[in-house]
Image 1: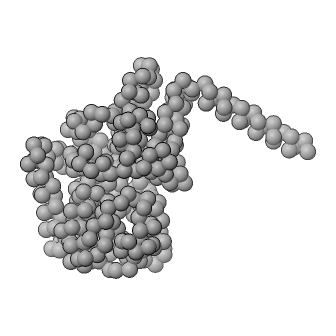
Image 2: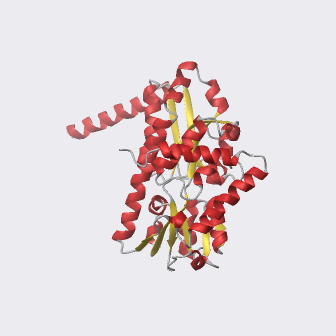
Image 3: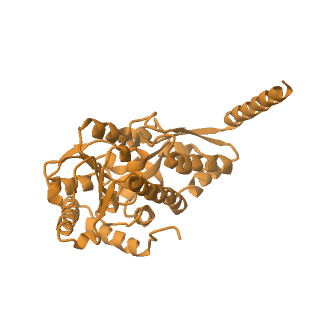
Length: 343
């Protein structure tokens, strides 16, 4: 009885102290994203960021996390942050079609070999000022990316582009969608959280995403075959409502500034690359088949298609008055200096 009473007292003290800390916060930031609350991305990136901000601000900033689209749907969460529904968002730029065309150069086929390298390329492009016009309505905090997205199929083996002819495939982004279209696939657009049910119900026959996504969204439970060809990478931004940032006093703005840029790009990349390796191993452990296309840009089947999509994307942006090839060259220069892993 005495032990129970002590435990109850301790729990009451802990609860009271938690309430006191929350009440002591001068600013509460609502942070929205679409990953599940039990994913490593949520716990090891976003929760870690929130806890670090709260600690660095001596409790003056509290961060409320809204995972799994609980505050805003994935494809509307960037605009929700612009409008102030959320104060901070981590989201795929491609979910807002046509809004971030230069940022999505980081998603081009075979741009980066890992989440670490592609995220570094994207962060570099922003820091060098190449992407300023795309983020005038928010304050970007840090950029990150996935490892290359590859093909995951429920039943069908896909080795060449022609094997996708007429196949219903989830289209995750503009770049991946163009690759799939050129291969003759029937594109079905949807955010990643909807892929499991769509694959289960036969709405789609396969999808393109990194192994990280296949793990986090449980697609490995449904798939049989995987083709490792670097069709695209997914680019993300963590952005803050500009008015929210501007309301902070200078010392708390510095806290946010100190939790921006390359440090958090790298922290996110470590988590994403670890999940990618885990997702790949999970598929192998389940007895699923994985085929790898080495040097895909020089592969006789895949190379011409991937190069065509790259050139057409750049030409399209150039025709609209955007400096696509200049930014693409800057991306390639950044790639030469961006590490593939954290070592």
